[in-house]
Length: 114
Length: 117
Image 1 (cartoon, rainbow over the protein chains, first blue to last red):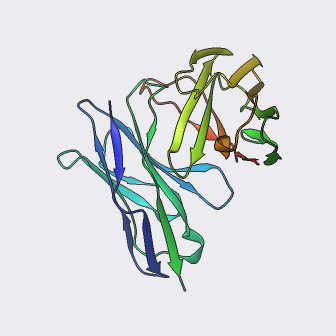
Image 2 (cartoon, chains in turn blue, purple; image 1 turned 180 degrees about the horizontal axis):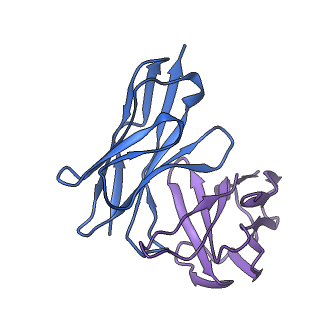
Image 3 (spheres, rainbow over the protein chains, first blue to last red; image 1 turned 45 degrees about the vertical axis):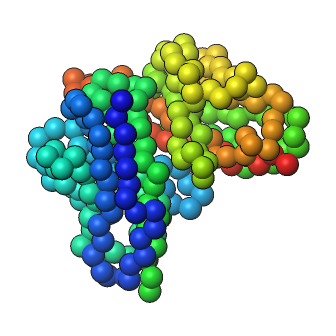
């Protein structure tokens, strides 16, 4: 079975600074990878996804992620964060064609400081 | 489209009472998922349906939990009797059948925050 590890539970960063949220996965077969964002008291919103093709994936709100198969990583980046990016971010993985096995990481709380 | 709609947004109930959470999926989506989010266990899949039929309920924690989907536009998750350890945020999500890539496009609702006192 696959698993997801988000290496940082909390990431504080100053406004307009760059940020990287780290995600590593383990799987013996091909996977699909996702980043979701959860704003306070709201549901999960898809930021971006990797299914195949280019390893650099661009998402909403200026975020991007890079799939690195050799390092089994899918780190999320943004070159300049805003106060409004304060939220919890979840990395998730599933197998192609699997409805059951969308596995989430434990989440990273990003706090953008003024 | 209004998205996945869950009700109520917040529920506070006393231990031992029955609780019913409701979900309306996106029209045309034929998969529906119930997730639970807690600080200790993160996001867990409880059960999912395909075309209103329960496919996998292995994540349902106990017999106190039950879920139904009487039609394509409505699902319920019921806890009877409720216990304080059931306090969590319960999310519903829906998706359409996968495309050729095998990708299920999940859309999540805003969740129901359940507090059992």
